[in-house]
Length: 202
Image 1 (cartoon, one colour):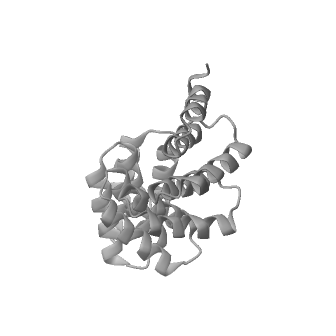
Image 2 (cartoon, rainbow, N blue to C red; image 1 turned 60 degrees about the horizontal axis):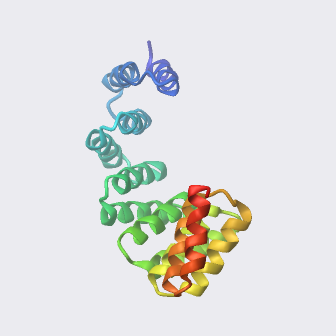
């Protein structure tokens, strides 16, 4: 079986959750073509799905050593690093992806999430404001913007942002939770408790 056929079979197995079999097919493809960056990136994705994050990162690193201009590999590496709490390294990867494609909004969003986790709220806010310029109904980005504003002590603006997000999706408990925090910081305790009741359904 040639490399293309091996990759197709590996992709098929990965799509249906047969990850260990998919890994075996990716290994066969890499035996015949050790520099196949598609195989390396997809193999990394399977490792990620299995919770084997260090193995996933090793695949991404190997692919990037072959070709440092792989947009999605930089993103996938950054995403993996963010998920395991290595936020500074993740941001570097997202910035590499954005250097290759400044309009890659997934990388911009995840850079913002990592910045929020680090408490670098001013930089995070800039990411989400830019993202919302191109995707004004993105509730997740809107909520993350509100979190950044709360972190900066701009609680009235944060509250307005959370209210806007709730206007788009009133059943998002994550937004209600952060809305309650903004209200609490504004000293509006009764309203904060009312927001929390939306989460518990009482």
